Structure formats: structure tokens, C-alpha cells
Amino acid sequence: MNILITGGAGYIGSHVVKQLGEKTDYNLTVLDNLVTGFRSAVLYGDFIKSDLSNFDEIEGIFKARRFDAVIHFAASLIVPESVKNPLKYYLNNTANTANLIKLCVKYGVNNFVFSSTAAVYGEPDISKMPITENSLLSPINPYGMSKLMSETILRDASKAYKDFNYIALRYFNVAGAALDGKIGQSTKDATHLIKVAAETALGKRDKIYIFGDDYPTFDGTCIRDYIHVEDLSDAHLKALSFLQENKKSDIFNCGYGHGFSVKEVVNTMKEVSGVDFKVEITKRREGDPAVLIAGNKKIKEKLNWTPKYDDLKLICKSALEWEKKI
Ligand SMILES: NC(=O)c1ccc[n+]([C@@H]2O[C@H](COP(=O)([O-])OP(=O)(O)OC[C@H]3O[C@@H](n4cnc5c(N)ncnc54)[C@H](O)[C@@H]3O)[C@@H](O)[C@H]2O)c1
Image (cartoon, rainbow, N blue to C red):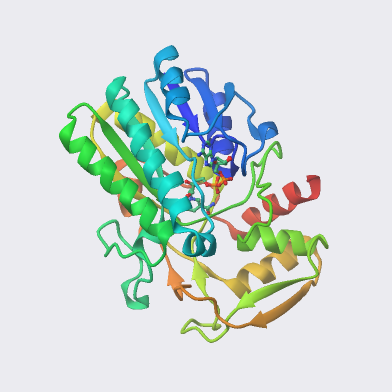
């Protein structure tokens, strides 16, 4: 299988490239503009530095290489930035995705795996947990909307062009690093809790902020569903197989189906690092739902996905070990 992976030098993309590369049945082309990704994270495949907005160049790549599938990670993903600069998000996430789909249809690339997000659900009611794929779609920021619009384009394209199929994977909170220590999350100025906690444990930050401890949860802090990046990567391999075997489009949540509070995560990082780092409670951020938990019945049943690393200590430890190296 000849696969194009956009954004494959990024955090999640590089882990999927690694899992695919460790198998012999895939030919990989990794395309990334390296704006937030790292060339060194790409362990397998041919690497092409290019930007998805460069339509002619991307079309040249489609002409030269006959892809069987595309896995599309490339995106901008900082929520507050999307509120300040929505056009960046609609152009990089939605318009570039539309152009990529156009090339897939034109060149007969009929299998498309798309990185979507729990942000398409917006701020679901705490009584509505876990979130299923049929829950209300109501993004509250341009980032989430740019992804929902991409999903909509995929849905309509798959209806109009009968051979074109896609799987949208809606990731919850992705965390951790490859367990062999070869790659991990190197994102600059990351806002992801587990990475920030690892940085704080290692003295790269003075303290960690907890944004609000007055939420209607058992300890007052927000609860999220943290999924280890290797389990998430495996979902992509399963999605590819599903597309090949069933030639059918679908959408799946990716998470473990239960969550941890911010305080629990911070305390777990303290425990695995042995460092009692400084924590400051500050006010809530706008748009942070109290609880986000993925209903994962569908992905388990239909993709036959079985998580292996549903263990907060292991996730924190792998993030910490990677953080020591960078
Ligand atoms: N990290 C999470 O917790 C999370 C949660 C939900 C969804 N997602 C989605 O997963 C995908 C990957 O996220 P990530 O955490 O690995 O982020 P990342 O920033 O590490 O990866 C994105 C990659 O895409 C590249 N890129 C961006 N725009 C590009 C363009 N126009 N042309 C070529 N390359 C481009 C970047 O250089 C980077 O390597 C994104 O689509 C994101 O929306 C991530």
C-alpha cells in the first residue's frame, strides 16, 4: 500500500509513520512543512518538505506517486489562536483539506483517514457523558469548526464520488511517547497538560497552572479522556484496513471511555517523577468543558480496536522519559 501522510513530522503523525514503517507492507511518503513538526521525528518513508497550500506542487506529487491512501494530520491546532486568527484555521485546515480531497478524487486515491477532534462536540453537557459519535456537533471555536467543516466535505465527497471513502477519527486528549523511547512530543510551547506537567517536573517551567478548581467534578478540576499516542496510532492502521476491506466511510471517537481530573494527572506526574513541583490554581479558561469522555464502543466493535496502554502512570512516565531527552 502506497500511502501519503500529511503532517507526518508532527507529534501524532510521526508515531503513525513509525508504526506503519515497522511493518513491511507499506510504502510511505511523508509530507510536512515543518512549521510545528520535526524532520528528525520521521523515522520511515520518503520525506518531502512542502506546504499543502501549494496546490500545483502537491498535484505534482500525486501525479508522480500513485497513492492508495492518504492519512491527513497536517493542521493548525491551537484553540485560542483560532479565535484570534480564524482565517488561518479555515485556510490551513478546511481549504487545504478540500484541495487534498479534490486531488484524491482526481487521481483515484479512494482511502482517506482524517484527524478530527473532540472539539467538534463543543461544550457537551456533563450529564451527556460519554460522548457518542451521534452526540450533538456544536463546535465553539474556529478550530473545532474548521475540523467539522472538513468532516462535512469528506461526507459529501464520499456520497458524490462512490469509490471515495474516508474514516474520520475524533481524537480526545492525546498524550505520551513511543514506548521504545525513539520519538515523543516535541511541540514548542505546548499546552497539553501531560507534556506541560512533564516539563514542570524537569524544571523546564517554574510551575504548572490549573485553570479552575470550581467545576462540578469530584475534585473541582476538569476531567479529560487521555489516550496514549501508540494506541491512537494503532487506530489509524485499523482504519486503513477497514477502508480496504469494507470500502465504507465512517466516523469514530478515539479515547478510553473514562477520564482523569487535572489534579489526578498532576499528582500522577509528581509520583512518577518523584518531584513535588509547584502548582498554582488560577481562573477558568473560556470554553473548557467540565468533562469530556469518549464513548468508544463503536471503534472497539467496528474497527476491532483494543487499547493496550490505558494506564495513566505509563502515559505520564513515557512522556517524562521523552521530555528528559529533548
Ligand atoms: N494533539 C492532540 O491532542 C490532538 C487532539 C485532537 C486532534 N488532533 C489533530 O491531530 C492532528 C495532528 O496533531 P499533532 O498534535 O500531531 O500536531 P502537530 O502540530 O505536531 O502536527 C501537525 C503537523 O502538520 C504540519 N503542517 C501543518 N500545516 C501544514 C501544511 N499546510 N502543509 C504541510 N504540513 C503542515 C506541521 O508542521 C506538523 O508537523 C491535527 O490535525 C490535529 O488537529 C490532535
